[in-house]
Image (tube, rainbow, N blue to C red; front, top):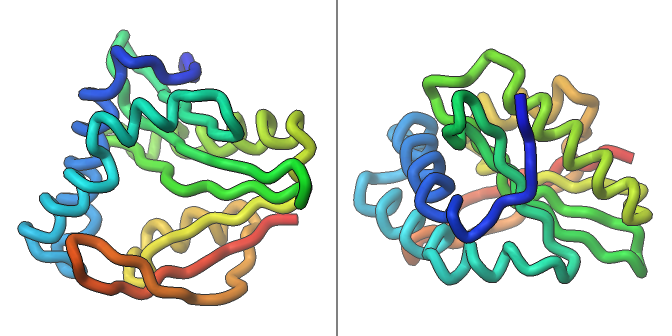
Length: 162
C-alpha cells in the first residue's frame, strides 16, 4: 500500500477520513455538534496546509486504489529527540487491514531518521480502540491531560514508546 507525504490535493480527503473516523469512534464520547466543531477546527483546510510545511511536521497519507484511506500527523523536536503523533486515523471501511500499522511504522521510521528517540502518542481517554492500538505496539501509558474540542474539555491519554 502506498504511503506518501500529503500534498495540497489531499486536504479534502484527509478531512473526510477525519470526519468519518470521528463519527465512528466518538458517538458515545462527543456529541454530533462537538464532532462537527472539532473537525472544522482541527482539520480546517488552512491547518492541514500548515502541517504540509516541512518544518518539523510530517503529514502522511495511505492510499488504496488511488484513494486516501488513512493519514498520520506527527511533529518532533530535534533538540529533545522527542516526537509526537498528533493524529493517526484510518477510514472505518479500511480498518483491520494493516493501514494503521503501516502508517505507524512509517512515522516511526521517518522520525527515527530525524533523530527522534522517544515517541509520544495522544489519544482521547475514552477512545478504547485508539488506546488499544498504541498499547499493542508497545506504547506505555504515562499520563493524562486535558484537550479542548468544540469548546469543551476532554481527558486525553499520553503514551510513550522509547
